[in-house]
Image (cartoon, rainbow, N blue to C red; front, side, top):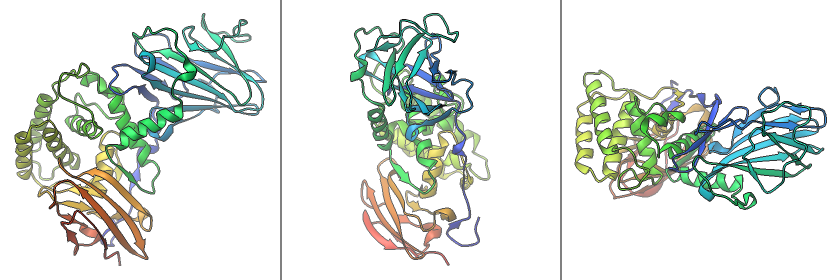
Length: 431
């Protein structure tokens, strides 16, 4: 920690470690596909993996072994882009899932090189508006049934694979949503839960990935939620509770007669809360993530209409020891969302909310900071912006929900507090 009050000396964001697999699917769809770090696609029905190979001007290029492969997950959402260096430029593969026509995995190959290329897919059941080359793959050994398509300079080939149990015929792949449309749709979905704008570029993509994985896997048994990046929700009560909160913040329904709801979440939530309270009853310092999970449990119970249960959790939490500060290193599972929000909007046990209560990270000083619709309890969200007047941060805030929530700035300005729903103030700054 810095010796300057209100300034956090440093934070560490470990989100730059790239995952080896990406979960694709649709919201609550009950099916998924995994794209690995080389662009291979595996459906969750046990069928063969779809690999891709590029015939360039010099030779066949195998993305599974080429050192020039680069991959990103666009904006953190389930649109995976894999680039393969070939003579004259790149061959780009983009993979995403759509709900259209019963569920499809869409694969696009864009030729950004200066010469025509061909792409081979190792499954015969890909759907395309184009006819595969009658000559097949020449000069490379591929699995039986592999198909080859030419891709002209500057053009894009689109093919699709049926989701498991999808038998819809006569699909016009050219009328399917584009990857840009999918990216915008996913961002809208995950940002419904609130979002932050900070200088560190790794935060938003990780949050988007965690939330989109949760949406895709919400139609599965809890034991299968661990396929995604959120954590082992079946054996980690903190991860499970935090995931439930994120799903509700994104508008998911966790109770009712919906066919994709396979779990009695109210009962399981009660068991998880009981476990956390029992395990931490005698702890001298409550782990920060347990504190956040107990606040999240109150949120979830209230959204489920179980207000008495929410009140019981709040009362039990008051009997526990004080909570530890979050670590400097950002978690990589679902705790990452709680971690970054805790630094910016920290709910207190008395119902008040601290904005940057533990200080502003030194690397963020002087940068414009924003927080939009971050949960501050079952009934409230907080939005704010920080703009700088020299060394003094100007705070503009808005609280949505019933009036009367007390805001304070903790170490950033111990003299300031407000119960107004909107306003602006110039905080003391740092000396």
